[in-house]
Each structure stands twice: as structure tokens, then as C-alpha cells.
Length: 144
Ligand code: RB5
Image (cartoon, rainbow, N blue to C red):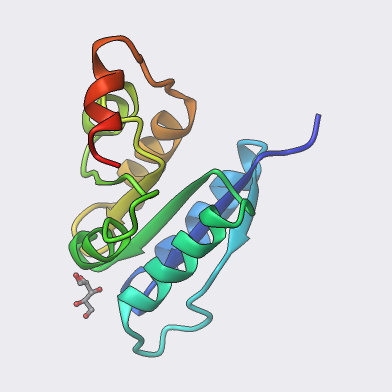
């Protein structure tokens, strides 16, 4: 079976965590699609949210991960795209619930706020939890 591609992008503040999460994705059997940034030099987080939104729109990946310093700016930028449901997550419970209830397709993390181990746990739970559907279906549909 072909590996599922997971798009991943960050600004400079998330550059290091992005490298760690790419390794984690590969270890989990996914194919990471790195959309930048390419170095720790200062960049603007909306550019990377936009890159990832474009990759999901044209079918390069169905799900993605975005990282900036707090996760706030990059999640705001991502959610300006109608097909994106980006969830800023700091803990495993939120990672699980945003999949079960919101059918989030993008996980956002704040590299300056959470440690690498928590980020990896959030990533694992986010990618392995299914949307519950049912009563949540209509609510999610109303967002787009
Ligand atoms: C960059 O310094 C920082 O502002 C950015 O990574 C992010 O935290 C914005 O929300």
C-alpha cells in the first residue's frame, strides 16, 4: 500500500521542530512533504500556511501540519482558506477531540510553547484518530 503523504510547513520559529516531526512521520510510515521554510532565517508564517493550503487544495496531500512560534499566527492564516480546518493544539486530548469532533485536516503547533515529546504525541494522536461523524457532521459542514 502506498504511504500517505502528510504536508508539513513552518516559519523560522518552527524550523527545528519541523525537522523532528518529519522524522517522526517517516517512522510512523507516512511520507512527509516538506513545504518549507528551508532554513532558520526569518520568514513570514502566512506564506507557509498558504503553501500548505495550496498543496491540500491540489491533492498533493489530504492532511497537514503547520508550526510557528505560538501556532497562533499560522493557524489563523491557514483558516482563511475555506477547505482548511486547522486546529491549534497543545495537548493530546485536544489533538484527539479536534479529529473526532471537528474533522480537522491540519494540526497546528507552537514550537516555543510545547516540547518536542508533547508535539510528537499530538502528531501521533492527530493522525490516528478518526472523525466521529454523526452529530458533528452537520456542524462541520456549516463551516464551509
Ligand atoms: C515569529 O517570531 C512569531 O511571531 C511566529 O512564529 C508566530 O508565533 C506567530 O504567531
